[in-house]
Length: 372
Image: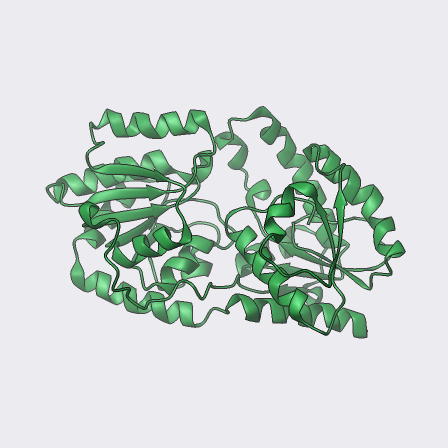
């Protein structure tokens, strides 16, 4: 774990470490950078060995150098049987068996560079793309979170389907449809639509704000829009606020920033509708959380969104403002449609594994390689 996980991937890794550290089937050795120490804070790793890399702790290229040149020797020295890499990239040349988890599709999405404002991020995508594809090609087992991503890699890279596996990301037991009797902290905001997303430039937030404004105007401004997610770009944050100001709509739209799990559960429980406008996702954790809570969903019809929600969402073209506005308008004030979507959300969520199940399936892949 030489990268810095965030969002849903962080939650997935934390749960994996908790469950793997409890199993008696394996002896766990962790390779990480010191910036990830907070990740291990609440996990009982008493019987695990942890190596911290100072080089990968310095800068992004340092991570690549340590991962590609030093890690292959560490695993030999420690007598590792199988190297499990949950961070998209792993040693391309390794003398031991390797399981590679692919957790993002962003670097392969052609439009990503168009949205990215930071120069360093723009130039790192081609390198990341090469390292990810080569890591997957040379792995003994490649795990994808969605069929969409699996098909993409199989079509474009030298990977045998026999050594790949699709494991949908885990759902969190914390998010359930059980209604809390505690008064909502957002009662004064109701009725509201909800968007949950870190505010990265590609997430399509300004267009969603414009579409919500147009749909809500037709509904006599009956609803509010709450946007929960940390700001990731000052320039992008300015563009979001500018879109709100352009419509003089600050009364109806609230940027909540980063919120706790407890607050997020509260938001899911009491929202009328989740709007998910991102055009590029590998398998959206937010959608899994929302479906687990029985939230009606409208979202983009691109990349892995249809793979994630199946029929538990109404889809729109994220690049077409008229289409997005129409779907939001037709769904937001339609009680019967929202009732059907709630049922479909819970049904779809019931077919997805919990984190413990995801870890066990992953462990089975690792043990299979050890036994071969």
